[in-house]
Image 1 (cartoon, one colour):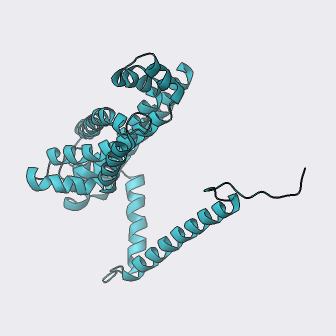
Image 2: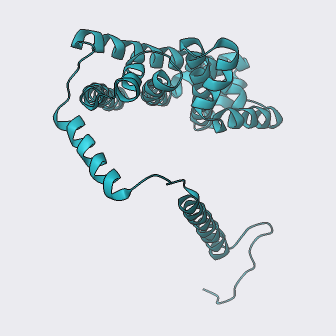
Image 3: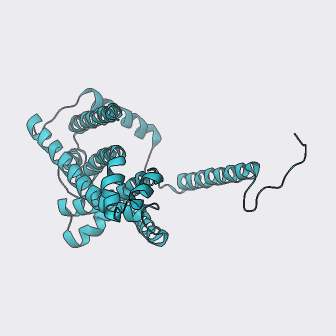
Length: 278
């Protein structure tokens, strides 16, 4: 081999330079996060808080929640009914977001739509995703009032943005040769999407949808407390803020934790079944 070195092709960046750029970006990100954290600690309002009193009380309340969960203002049947309301709220917002995202995902996929259209759709979706769920709920609460309507619409908006990104990336991972072959055989754009793209990415679509359902369940708990959407979150808010019953807070928390673990086990089994079917 010749010891002569050849210049890099035009527009290409040497591997070492690329590594240095990524490393600099990583250090810059960490530095910004550290500065923001330190600034937050120093500007945190701690007036009236005594750590010598606060920390022992915190651990005592946590131990009470874990070791002595008891319900005083409702029974097990009523509690399970409220959990069902929370699950229904999470499922409804997931279905709405998934249907809308599935319809719009082809227009956000670079292998299916023109680049200008993809850029516009992805920019709009990034804005939807950047706004937290609770902000969306409060935005719609201005017109609809606090309650389940604002919670459903607000959570559906964020679910749509989340799932649209996930679905479009799943569509872009499909082998381009399959799409080109269908186009060459005379298939229309809609036939390509319906007969090739969606079936080929069905496994990823189901996985992402179930993940979003888990997220929406936890969001539904928070919205029940913050937006008056009902369900287990509202009971948790009443127990902690109105009744101030630590035992009841622990009772509701254990029920929510049990459902969350059940959803996680269901997601694991779903993934295993999909691997078997492949």
